[in-house]
Image (cartoon, rainbow, N blue to C red; front, side):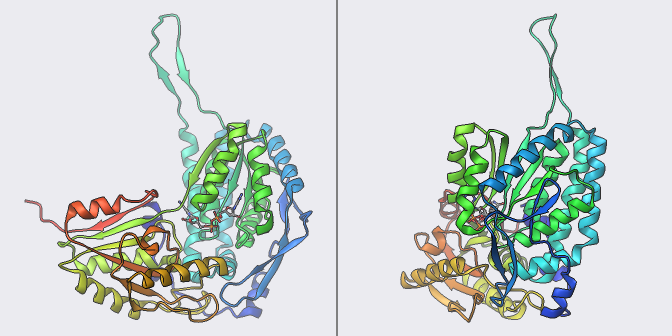
Length: 448
Ligand code: NAD
């Protein structure tokens, strides 16, 4: 999938060890904590909420807690800005997009450091993610020039039928913490290229990265009101989400996050009949067929499973391995995990596995593993908490399709291995999920 093919692997970027906390604060001088509305940095009318470093529990900053009132101000600003932004030529809009890309890349190391502090992922992954976010602005600056319409043969000789592409209007963008700038970059670049304006509601776990993004937009000369960022605390997400769904001035809602929240937003948008775009949870099968080369399948499983400490929607959630190579695969994977994975703070050298994002996700993961072990899964490695929000890279065998670990999204560094006998059986099992987001397989054949 796009995530796997385009995001850099852990080894592409060296981990850094140069930032201790004091240095971070100096480096992060100018860190934005207010909401960004109508081109200005404003207080949230709900006060502030704390953002913590999941690796240490330390509070990093207090961020504006926006209420429905603030969101309505942002909707109004985006709605007014839309009237002029939509009329800009594609060439003008593309120039602004390229400037945003430039500003993101200029500030890449600082934004990445901030991202690592609030999300926990290794700095190398954060650096890659900022670059990935910037790349969307280049792509959509180019793609904006190709918003071609169509001519359609008419049944009547005196009529011509054509289609043209028009911007939809104000876009509400609700984004998750696991790729806090890539998901924003992807949504905002497309919206702006099309001539839409937007309101970003970032995750309460990673608002600082979203505000750093807004700062890049400001520096790039994005006109006031075209990009607005309204962070809010977990206690307010429902009312803020509802305000975005209920407003007739918001024409489209784009959401990346969990399936449950997606379902709620989807039904809430019914009253205004908005356009909706959703990227939700996954339960990806990863199949290792008997002909697979283990020296390819094992690195493939490592890359898919452990990037972002397993907190990706396209990660290998259920690893199906054919019985004939099962034991060799398991011992090879265990050896690779021991050799390649190092847990710790994302700012430290050599670290590949950061903490779990928050206590809620940690407890969910811990419970899922415990219940699966109680139901008969075997812990080959890991499987028990090791302090704070750190969960050790874990390998479970003997997993059965009906266990919690195979039914739910793991969202953590736990490789769950299921054994299979036949192709028919594994295809049926792979498809036994209501979350068909991603999938992968390894096999080998020689062309005749
Ligand atoms: P989440 O659904 O809890 O939160 C996502 C966003 O929705 C956050 O900004 C959150 O504040 C907001 N939110 C939560 N409840 C809301 C409500 N009632 N109204 C309005 N907004 C609300 O998910 P998460 O824990 O942040 O992210 C993990 C989930 O996201 C996983 O299930 C993962 O698979 C999914 N995800 C999917 C993709 C994809 O591309 N398909 C990418 C990343 C993450």
